[in-house]
Length: 419
Picture 1: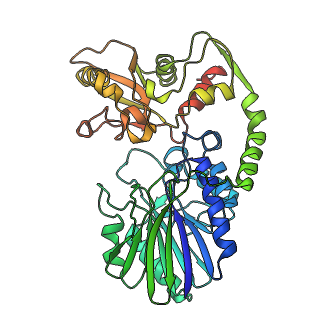
Picture 2: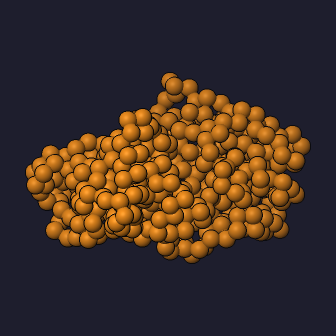
Picture 3: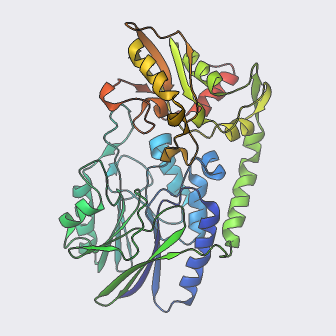
């Protein structure tokens, strides 16, 4: 077999980089005298990208289609926020198969695909450590689903089996990441192309007879695997900053902008006061009928002035895809939470999900917390969840989320005179 596999992962909405990668992929496929596949290992979407944010990720799959992608595994950037329906929309918008072997009950993605003699399986981080959300779909064991799909592909004639993995190269949450799962898939899988952990593996890593590869993040690099008979070599190439932006990707992005223009121009209502983090905390409190509302500045991009507001203005100011949530907390917990959230150093912190923005001030509205009392608290999965650092895991809060509704949709309902 003579084959070149180009691969990316965790582009996270870096639209210009994707347009440059599209140029490199197009050139490679045009000049090669053998088969070339372009595979993506998930999270091409991101709320920090305008088009991705406004279409719940769908636009990025339209761009990745123009870039010549042949197959992609589902990441976590969309379903974790928008639910299973977003994956169905992504699959409909893609010219390539969306692969997802370890989830069930979702229309659109498929477990695997056979492209000539190359079989490709896709799996993603199941996030089953988050157990307080009704996701609306099922999960299968990562190892079992990977092994079964790989063996099925072998039975259908695959000479090479690739696992497109959004599990991470090394993951703090067991049981599976690329390094852990590779020893269990010897003889079933030949190559693991990974994502999720943003590792850059310049020459890949051989784990037994399986080559594990990953190409960093944000489209700064493109991975390459060259297979020639019994020889398999991995490398990673930096995408040159002066690479031409692919005209087809630019045209598709412009088409998406046109399509969503009317939606964004729609008036939503009027603001009686500026819409800032404190005002959003109050909207969430009233929506849930809670004693207290909490919201952090890091979730907003700018403060909207009082007056008439359009959907476009709201969506530009609030890119957050956090889900509103309701929980009970003691006064002691709230006092500790406020103290932590308003430490200057903590506020300056830039957790990875905020894409470089600081946490900012933590706003609390409603009742003043008192030790020895209990309160119903409205907030979002950002402040209450495991990734922001506000709430210690050992508090084990029981949270009820409005999944897959997101914050700006809750604000829209408020502006329209709803909840």
